[in-house]
Amino acid sequence: MAEYERVLCVKNEVFVYRIPPRPSNRGYRAADWTLDKPDWTGRLRVTSKGSELNIKLEDKISGELFAKCPVEAYPGVAVEAVMDSSRYFVLRIRDESGRSAFIGIGFTDRGDSFDLNVALQDHFKGIKQEQEAEAATKEMALDNTPKLDLGFKEGQTITLNIGKGKSKARPKPQGLQGGGGIGLLPPPPGGARIPPPNAAPSQNTNMSSMNFSNPAPQRAQQPSSNIDLLGDLVDPFQSQPQQKANQSSAQDLWGDFTSASSNNDPWEQF
View 1 (cartoon, rainbow, N blue to C red):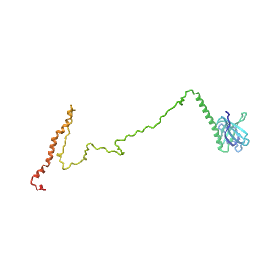
View 2 (cartoon, rainbow, N blue to C red; view 1 turned 90 degrees about the vertical axis):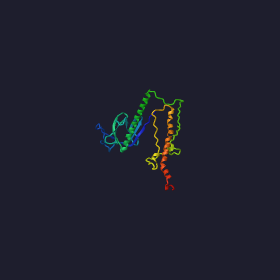
View 3 (spheres, one colour; view 1 turned 135 degrees about the vertical axis):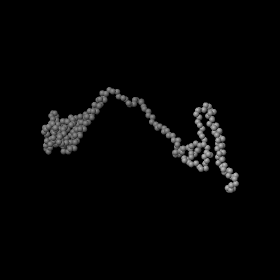
View 4 (cartoon, helix red, strand yellow; view 1 turned 135 degrees about the horizontal axis):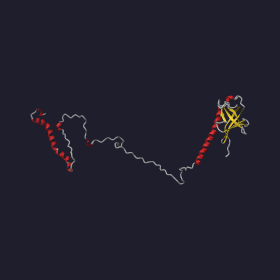
């Protein structure tokens, strides 16, 4: 496949300077140049063809090549920024015979120098990513570990049962009625009424007329037969004479009133 030359950056005005040898190992300084008198003025183009990158200095009108700077890496020896300004660089140019020389270039606007930096960085960053991708592809090709095949075979199908489950009705609590209200508790068995606490007895009530029944003593031993189980049921019938005696004692309370009616008392006719 034929590779085409791509233009990455174009600056229509660039200044070229002849520079003195490097004064020290620290770097170049643009203040040592004759900045007000550039040696050449023209156009700068950054082009790439595959992995090759070149900075070309050309004539503005005719497009004739003035100098070419092959760039193998950035930052590197081919392109070096000066120490005292961000608008000036030092380029290592080469001719067809392979001879090299160092020249200085500069821009009027700082944005032009920024664009040159970005174009150089993006090119070499893209080359690094391509190399990493190729290395990963080769590593996968050399890997002989069997891969797990999770794809469907020919004629293989899968069935999914997706359905809504039947909702179960919740049972209502026993205390709730059909109307949704809270039901009342049932009355105690027998309809017996419980007297209020601390209720004083009536004055006309005679304590002797109240019957107090002693609880039957519990049997210490279990009955030996079914006949003994009926023994407690016979006792209430045997206590009938006692109840009659109590009734006769209640009638004696009115004895004074009955005897008084037999005497000749003037209140009797009333």
